Image (cartoon, rainbow, N blue to C red):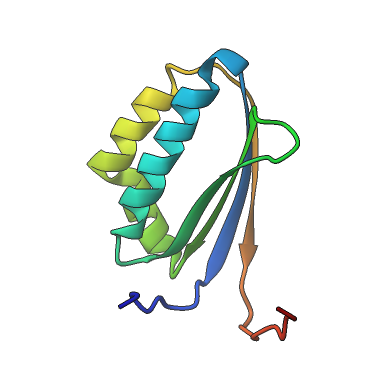
Length: 111
């Protein structure tokens, strides 16, 4: 049975460009970070995806129920360990934005 997640209060969209020599290591690290975030009560979701056109680019999309929950995640021992590992990798460029959610509506999408 899937865990029901709360509608996030805000979203984070981040983009990382990684040196080709560190792509595999970053992919593994991003997966571990997503797994750890999913276990946190305040995380609605954290998705990490490798770009389909450039395998050295990764996109992280996160949803958190509150800024407090997000900051607790950032301060956690698990996240700090991931951050220390990430600092050892050659990340060429990183950027991110935070978006605040006003509501939720289901999309009617054809199959």
